[in-house]
Length: 396
Image 1 (cartoon, helix red, strand yellow):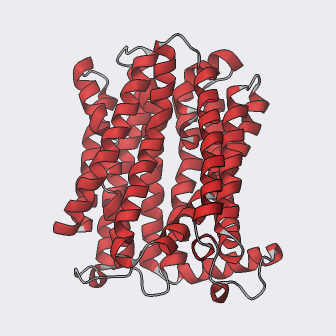
Image 2 (spheres, rainbow, N blue to C red):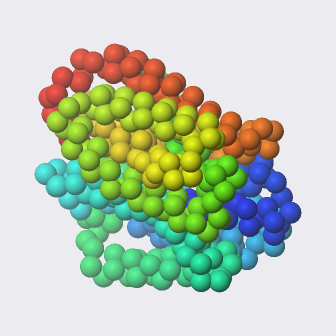
């Protein structure tokens, strides 16, 4: 939810704070920059000290970031809120995945990850629905974002108390035998990060896969951040209704994650990825045309996010197939940085483009990203084809 605080209120922020599309896009991009920068340091803390310490930091800072966003009265304040929100988001993956792995056995871990992904997409869908619902009830955006902050704070307290009272330390803390010899020594983080980076560069397939995840994130953030402005500006849909449609779009994408997983198991990961990216090209391209009837545009928007979200299990399965034993951790770090990097780059870049041109151009570029993603998928599958023979791999 915290990653989607700003897109539903872009229009209100421009009016209330007197800023333009590039400035609002830069604020959202700043969230992504903070998330990207803190992935490895917080992952190190989770591995060397405590997973719940990282989770607690994220839960508390996320609620605070939402509260600061709800009370922002100036652009510098909004940027400060973006930094705090980024800190609130950054620790979740470094904490969630080790927690899930420690709490499940291999026979159920895949389902745990699929539920994690499903609820994550629902989280993306929640803020547009809350903002749209608040608008329908006569409340402004500050009430909606403030409500998210309150719910997040309450959840954080309940979650951490539950972990403290009911969850074993075998789950919440790393195995002492897996901790770095120097323990929680922040001074060693740059050295460890450099060592990790050199190791992943030795795997061309994973470098390419990291680029593909970056491209996917760019397209996904363009869709999340700018679908509501497209519906309002090009197709004449009221702002509140546009946010509700975006929420429905993201919910549809969340549901189709399960279909994508089913198809990945029965066809192939590469085929599902190619189908998703080809659908992205077609749907985004038609919306960029700008001449569709409103009903047709709304129908296409409902499946727009699914072109990316539905192929998430396929991307994960492809990553598993290209992973050797002992490499899953560093490979996930690479892919997460690709995801976060897309979140850092896409909103401000598309915001600048929107300021220079039009919302239709933004969606034309999203379709172009789909073209590049198709080509990159073909290259990744080709490079790693000997690993993609259908045999079980780590994480399957």
